[in-house]
Length: 112
Length: 112
DNA sequence: TCGCCATATACAGCTCATCGGTATATGCTT
DNA sequence: AAGCATATACCGATGAGCTGTATATGGCGA
Image 1 (cartoon, rainbow over the protein chains, first blue to last red):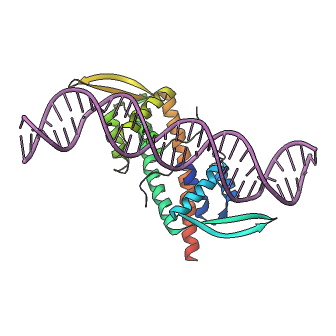
Image 2 (cartoon, each protein chain N blue to C red):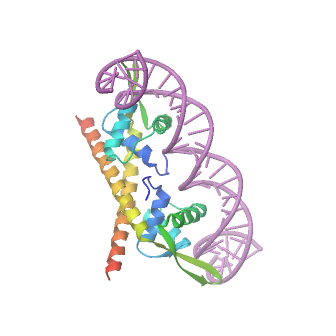
Image 3 (spheres, helix red, strand yellow):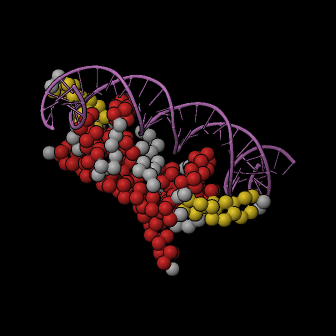
C-alpha cells in the first residue's frame, strides 16, 4: 500500500481505467471528459504514470491490438488498484467536506 | 487566477484557514484533525506553502502576537483565496464523483 | 538538573511527479 | 501540401513537498 496522496493526473488515470480497460490515447480523451475539459494530460505525464502504476501493481496490460499498423496497448485497473482508488476517493471526500463546511462558516460570519 | 490543481497539503492549509485565522502551529494541528490523522504536514511544507500562498494573495498575515517570548504569526484566508478554494472543491467533487461511479460500474460487472 | 516533549518559526538540500517540447508513424481531410 | 487526429515514447526543466536540521522557550518527569 501507500499512505501518500495521489496527484490529480494519477487519480484521473486510475479513474479512467476503473470502469473498463482502455489504451493510452483513450485515457487521454476520457480524462478530458471526466474533468469537463479542465484537465488535458500531457503525453509524457500519461505514459510515465502508466509505467509507474504498472510497477506499483495498480494497473496492468490487458491486451495489445494493432490498428492501422499502429499499436494499441490496453491497460486495466487491478484489484489492488481499485482498492487504492477507493481509499483515495474517501480521503478526498473527507477533505472536500471539511473545506465546504468551513467555507460556509466563513460566509455565515461575513453576514453576521 | 490559476488553472492548475492544488496539491493535498496546499488544499488543507487553505481549508484550515477558511473558518478563522490561525498561526502556523495551529494550522499544523488543524490539518491533522481535518484529515483524521492521515496527514501530518512537515514544518518545511507548511511555511513554504504559507509563503507561496501569500505571494499568490490567497492568504495574508492577520496579526502577530508574542506569547512566552515566542512569535505567533496569524494568517487569514483572503477573498480570492476563498474563491480559489471553492473552485478547487468543485473540481475535486467532480472527479471523486466520476471515480465513485466507475468503481460501482466495475463491481456491477464483476457480479454479472 | 538532565533530557524529553510541545510549542513555534525557518532554511537547505533532495526527490520525483508533472510539464513542455520533441520524435516517429499512419491516415484522413482541406 | 499542410494540418489534424490517432498513438506511443523519451528527455530536460520545474517546483511542490519531504527529510533533516537549527534556533528558542517552557513545562514535566526521572
